[in-house]
Amino acid sequence: MSDTNEQKKLPSQIIFENLKEFLRAKNAAHESIFKFHWKKMWPFNRIWPQVDYERIVRLMSEIRKNIIAQQNLVIVAKEKAESFEKSFLDAVPAYLEALDKSCVGLADIAQWKQDMLYKKIHHEAKLVRDSKGYNELLKTYEKEQADLVRAGAFVQAGWMEVVNSLTKT
Image 1 (cartoon, one colour):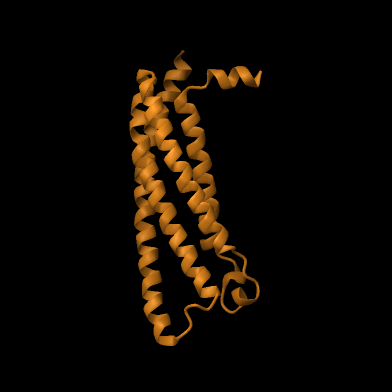
Image 2 (cartoon, rainbow, N blue to C red):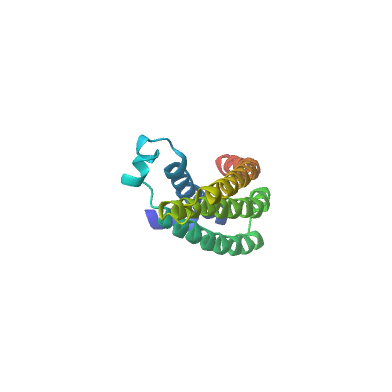
């Protein structure tokens, strides 16, 4: 039964499922860094580091590699796509680019926090300078997140066309 479902899936359905998985993984990393918890506050974070920042950096790198493969899949899917899939497949490359930039931003923040844990940033004067750098990382990431949300709206609109066309048939 599942084999027949797999054969009936359109390329746009496969791409949409992959996008959901990428976003789910990125959002989990985002929440692990930014979601409030008392163990993340200083000085408790020195005792109980709750976030494995190095793992987040590696995860963002993996997602970025998968985004490249997904971009290639979109190119192939455009060649054999139905007419109702076109707007979805046209919106996906911009979304993948925004997701890639967002992953880079989140990895930069995780790396900064990992460096902080390892006390690579330890002098008071350097801490002030690096906290300004951290604020810039946060502002950049915030902009990248906003771009991702905007690109996601176009993907969602294109996906609704695909869903509407599939339910009509």
